[in-house]
Image (cartoon, rainbow over the protein chains, first blue to last red):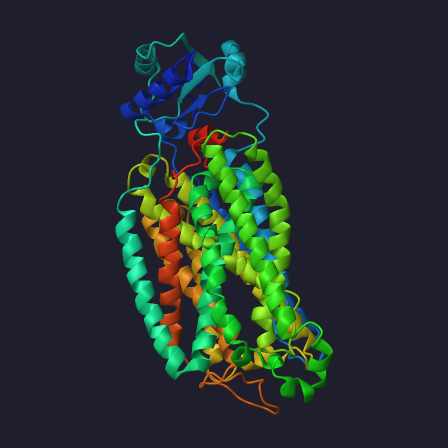
Length: 182
Length: 406
């Protein structure tokens, strides 16, 4: 995978804006230009950004549903195995497989499975915690948590080209464009 | 925004008239039923009455929850809750047939029956006609007063009185406690005592969960209707229906939780005082009604309401809401009717063993349509009297601006 060029592989190019409207506008233009591998950074949540960046719906609900179903099946199987197969005991004259009594545990393990897969799935999908991220190599990025708004087009993007992408970002009238070292 | 008066749309009037016609036709059929099949009439009336009383009281309960919790979901339909709670005077009058039908509905009203039944003699201090009527008067007085004051203060708020906001919150706190206690007692009086030997401490909660569910389903229908017309088409958005859908999902689960808890406790204890309730309901055809309830008032709406897209699409959410209202009727039918035989006689009226079986009488269709038509007519009459939003509420602007929908 050795590069023949002398240029070190960068994480991407990052444009800096001083207001959220310009950031959303920039993200929209970049999406329409065909960029897909990009991210935006802002001191506060901007609801419009999801659509502007072309972020697809999260897969988390499907993971939670699967976790819930598996948890429920697991709980019920555990009850069935212990009351019918492993320790079949007559209690109060009821059949071994008295399913109404299995429901509370099934319900609880469904919730447990769904809750655990929600938490774990969330961390897997958003890749947190992340001790190192290249965007912090740009000194200006410190202001991303105060009063600056950043759009970073990453070098993994199939349309990424060091010169053309810089020209494109310059055309959005940012405060500046920096190359992000990886 | 051009129009800030939020006057109700004019085509409410046509719906109101249609409801009145349907109601009067239904009541005319009920009158025929009263003449030719009186026992069936009283039983069918009680079920239909409980269904629509549930929408009134459930709306009042949700309105009080909203006064306490705040939130955009309740602000945009507060006037719907208020109009629904102002049907309570009508529902007080429509209780009269239940009073007249006490001898048919409740075995403990017959002295000779009580004389032959030792258990009922012990319960006679509570289950006797004068005390029953006194309690009913007390419930109706309390419910009507809560609805009256919350509605009156809400009107004062429209006229610029800001002090009432706090008053409404305070009354709602006490009002919710009063509602929880009285609906429990009313469920025991009006429904549980049809089978006077049987008892369940969760019974009132099953009614409370059901009434919340009925009210939410009804509110979804009205909100969807209003959201297609000026002025509310600018206000009611997908995120509001998303919230209604989430609350409905919660109440579907709550209802199932209460019903199942009662079933599980009685199943596990397997006591001779309690188990006949479920033996009656799992034999002679009633078991299919029970399965239908589990499927269509829990599993199906639960699965559908998990979908975010469905909750945000008002036209699809409306289908779920209509289904739930129908299921609410079947649920109440299943609480009451298995205690009667196909001729409308209470199975516990005579000594000895009696066996009923599944039946459906034509009055069971006429009574909900009759009471429902009058109820909806009254509801629209109340709804069109005021702006569709509490225009001077201090939290209204926040509610309209929030995009999160909470």
